[in-house]
Image 1 (cartoon, helix red, strand yellow):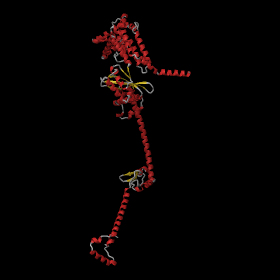
Image 2 (image 1 turned 30 degrees about the horizontal axis):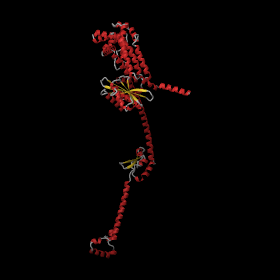
Image 3 (image 1 turned 180 degrees about the vertical axis):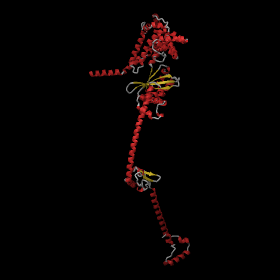
Image 4 (image 1 turned 90 degrees about the vertical axis):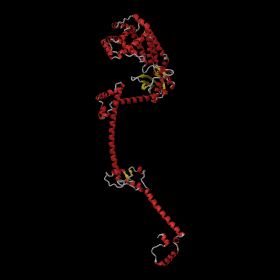
Amino acid sequence: MDIRSFFCGASSSKSPGHSSSSDTEDKIDSNQSDTEFLEPSPAKKRLIVHEKHAKERLTTHEKSKKITASSRKYNKKWGESFNWLMFDKNFQGAFCKVCRKRGISLQRTGGTWISKPFTNWKKAIEKMKIHAKSDIHLLSCEAEMAAATALQEVIQQLQQINDEEKLKNRMAIKALIRCTHFLARRHIPHTTNFDELIDLIVSCGAEDLKGFLERARLNATYTSKVAVVEFVEAVGLWAEECLLKRLRQASHFSIMADECTDVTTTEELSIFFRWVNMDGQPVEHFLDIVPLKATDAKTIYSALVEFMKDKNIQISKLVGMGFDGAATFSGKHNGVQSLLKKISPHALFVHCHCHLLQLACVQAANATSGIKHVYITLTTLWKFFHYSPKRAESLKAVQQVLDLPELKVVKPSDTRWLSHERCVKAVKASYSAIVTALNNIYEQTHAPEALGISKALCRPSTLVAIYLLDYVLPQVAKLSRALQTERIDLTAITPLVDATLNTLDDAMLPAANWVLELMDAKNEIEEVTDITLTTESIATFQGQVAEPFIRMLKANISSRFISQDIVSSFGIFDRRKCQLLTLLTSIHMVRT
């Protein structure tokens, strides 16, 4: 019964035994207002509040039960214990990915975990353990493992085939790179001769390369000019990196550089480095050609420093510098060597000794008018035949008729080592043919240059000077070649210089070897030219030209090799002498 009806007695039916009391209450109600009659007593108020709080507590409990039940959800950590577990956001439930994939193929009816999502999160762990041990799950796992094993075997076979194909392709590319390297090393034009070289190698039985060219697509044979150029660049980068790696490992190094002008009139700087390798042997390698904006000392210095910084070469390891004698490089105050010494104060500058010998010969010739005129005549002779193929063919034809060696006139240069020696040797060997060819050309074309050069060569002083130079210059060239050897013995430099100076003294003797050789060729020369050679004319030439030239040459060589005692002192580092000294010391210790 409702509390309000209990206290107010608001019932629609009346009991027979209580009619009088009800009538009495009705009368009382008519005499009192409705507000006063409905006002409960304090005891009744407490009962009403108590009932209200009880209903609120009951409603709160029911709501909490509903919230707890609806807040349960899938836990991602379950996937760590059951790797077959998968949660589907669309179904908001869990599935067994193995059974869902393989259960249908096993003709199972499915159900929860397969076609229906699992959502009983309260008993999730228990149900998952039961499913993991179920027959359908075990059969599905076996089917999955069998399929995975078969797939793995197929993948392994494909991988093996791919590895074999990759190995064959690499072998073919390696062969192509070697062909490119072969052409580049021998200065053979690689872009025009690469295809022919590849065809030759394939025809000789290069099966890997042949198979690669047959399998490859037409745009992926790597035989185009672009590919060949890329091969050359790749080999160059690889070689440069290998050299730089060895150079960076060296404790110290020396640098050599020289500037030149290429065919496009671009100033360039060639850079070489020299260091001691891990085996204790000195090695020397070319590294790069750097373009120059100018040829002054500061520009060259900046180019060298920037190059070493870009290649990560420690400039502090620089201990030696080798340049020519030009003021740009060798200047004591503003030269390249003086600027580099500010960075590496202990670096020593060494003037190229071969260049020194060439300068000694050139200065001695310029100081002697008889020899200077001969050098001018040889230069004019080279230009006359070099710039005219027709004239060169005329000389070649005369050499064939006279049964002389077909030698070309070499360009004499003041800076190119041994160039004068080769030029003099060629002119002497083909003297008769050259004079005859000049006369024939003048008769046919009336070229004044041919007549002028012929008259200059037919002077007795010119002919005697050629024989003198053919004796003197090879002696200097012999010393120059000795200085150019890769493993030069420093202790042998002084004896070589002394021997060269003594040989030059012999050239001033009246019965020198070159004089005797000239007298033996006298008759042959007089048949071709109008030259008349006598003992007196040769002696006069020796006194007026040969002796001054040789004395000047000896003085120049001696002045440029004044530090030979210092150089010879480095002989204490000779490994052979050190080993001998160690052996003798050991023998002495054993005896004592």
